[in-house]
Amino acid sequence: MAARIAIINTRAANLHSVQKALEKVGASAEITSDPAVISNAAGVVLPGVGASDAVMRAINTQGFAEPIKQYAKSGRPLLCICVGMQVLFEGSDEGEVPGLGIMKGRVKRFPSDLSENGKRLKIPHMGWNSVNFTEQAYTDSVFADIPQDSYFYFVHSYRCLPDDPSVVAGTTQYGGEVCAAVMQGELAATQFHPEKSGDIGLEIYKNFTRRVG
Amino acid sequence: MLTRRVIPCLDVDAGRVVKGVSFVDLRDAGDPAEMAAFYDSEGADELVFLDITASSDDRETMVDVVRRVSSQVFIPLTVGGGIRTVDDMRKMLEAGADKVGVNSAAIRDPELINRCSKEFGAQCVVLAIDAKRVANPAYLRLQGEEPQLAEAPWQVFTHGGRRPTAVDPVKWAKLAENLGAGEILLTSMDADGQKTGYDLQLTAAVSENVGIPVIASGGAGELEHFYDALGVGEADAVLVASLFHFGELRVSEVKSYLAERGLPVRGA
Image (cartoon, rainbow over all chains, first blue to last red; front, side, top):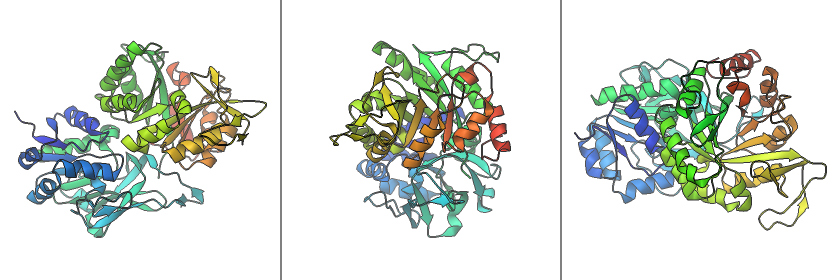
């Protein structure tokens, strides 16, 4: 039987962790380099870690850009992780390759003088931070049963700045408010790594798998 | 708020964890996957697996260990020991490691950090530094720089602490950051195994001079030591080996203590 969930091969280091997490929650997931597979998939995951240009190049050279945009419009479940979330936007200061532009806004580096209570903060923002979910997240979504202020594992030096604040599903605090998750219909994206956030992270994969049906 | 991390470190020899947990009734304390699951349930924020295998034949065994652990335990996993090339790092990442530590090979060839960082991203590259206090600070000769006086009274050692180098850990950490390292794992050879506390001076000296996170390692013996390393030591995370393995302290006890002292931790 064909895998119902397709993981797009972004050649990123966390591909296999994402697959293992989906398998752990009982899903059947396949890493694919074939754009035709996602057109027929019931669920798609766009993982990413590292540099946004590398992820966008992997998307472009394998012919994934248009199929991802079409898939997002189709209203089927799409989950984007970390740099996979960042490439949804129009572009990133980290590189030169334009993003997918599915969401309006840009990705910018944390300022180098980032501080909290007078203390300079390290970049990358690395470790477990609590997420404050918005009302929208607690409607019908992959975040619906995740307790407020749950801790998730983050590792990133760039953050998303959506033009439309209504897409924000969760925020965290690191020298100010940082966008931790966005959603739009069946599209959900997290800056944190649910596949590295223990049981609470697996809950998001479980919810995603359930929505795939 | 970002929490401070408590990270158990496990030594793996030929696919088996050496120094088992002695206070809990584990079916097989030598099994890396079982140990990892145990520490995950205890509230560990990440895990570090150090491959202490001497022979290169057993490197494949370590890849298999990483594969098994990462399909069962879903918290960040750092692997170190014997990493010499971009391909060594790729193997570990593909097996399921999230970060890979480099040490001796990076001293020999600092550009290794840059190549790994370009290939996989800075977040994957951890520079492990073993440092020891010396009476006469070393002179530095890093990457064609003119020899100059070290900034601090420590010296970097490689090959499991057996071989001295003419490198100052503060300077080395700064260079590694510029080359693309995403994190520093800093072990004080003086404090290691002494249970008298982390080397706060060394930890603070490195942490103040880099913009990337620093994990303090070596010397933990009492609860207060963790607070000091994360406080005056300015570490972002603390690494613990024997104290946890022999059951003298539990991860949860350390976290409760840190929370009582006002430091942000997860799940206390």
